[in-house]
Length: 249
Length: 268
Image (tube, rainbow over all chains, first blue to last red; front, side, top):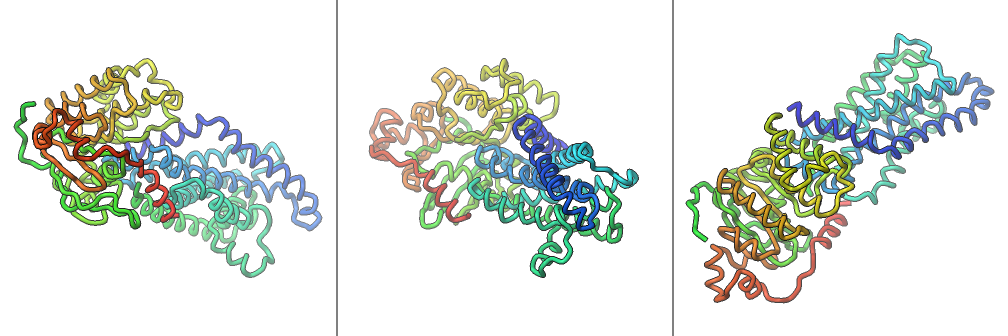
């Protein structure tokens, strides 16, 4: 059982580390966001009494880069369908749940590592981790974000046969999840409809958790954030496994 | 060709099988059986029938109607049990471009539970067999079409399934490689009593290597039986002549592509 899961995991890692352009591209974006938003909105944020904007923004950007990498590796199912490799794995004498677990863990590992590297980059821009004791908990939040959104990407991609749907996923799923998670701005005083969306958006809890553990902000509700992340990850994981097991080619 | 002593066990049993994509009937009420140890050819002009049938038998696609059994198991409900029994070389590409030839072989062997020592031996001998051993550490995306094809075949032969599906395995290969490959498969068939179910457009391959065959046109089986019986009953001299007599000389569209489009339109 370990063998198949391991090779599917290894495959995701190898594909990622071999694609240099993809790696460079995926680091350019968080750096751009950190610099543009960090220095662009920093003074306004400070004037409004929010304090150091980089401290606020960095956990959000770490979550963002993990979200993007996780969703993209999940969505790779569409590529594998297009280039044929998917059917090679789907006819193997291995329960599809193992294929799905291996793929998802591989994608999540890549996204998780990506988030850590972005955190290190953020420190060069002035981000400070205030309580190093909380780092293990922060890593747990980061890994849950990686796992949840890789599974979500896999679930969505299991239903799609073509990359033409990619802009839809980008604009109707990934972007709203990112913008309305509190990654860029505090979620206070929003219109009711948007506030509801932020409440059902799982990334909100991930960003809250990351921010609380890394910068020692609001500690209340930390366990609630963690609980929500764990439950949602399990639920999405089960849905993803089901969708993946039902793929027809 | 002398008839072999075929085991009584049925490798494949198909009864009144149909598959529709929307209004289009790709497979129309077909029935056939393949015995354990047999080499069975599935022939027909271009169209979606052959590949669609193989996809259904190999658990990739659910049927619309009818009954299928692969070694007694239902590909629609007992997918894992069916998957334990077969190997397959697909008609179109199914390699991972971003992995090396060796990694493609190795990952496949792990997925098919080939033991580590055995794995190394078989991968080396098969890569040498298809003359790709020198290129084993190169990414597949640098390979030509013929090299990819050879790798696909080598990969399909790493494990020893009870039944091997070959969907136009020799397409795009030179005659030397084709003969080379068929002799190897024939050997596995004889020595390991491996059942082989294959499609091909080369009639001389079917004539030479198949024990029995079925000819399909427009979704239906128009004849099936032993190769020499079919040649005799059509009063022709070769399988190619028999095939043309039975299926006519008009050229078929490659309708698989339009079906793919239909399915996409339906699902997205």
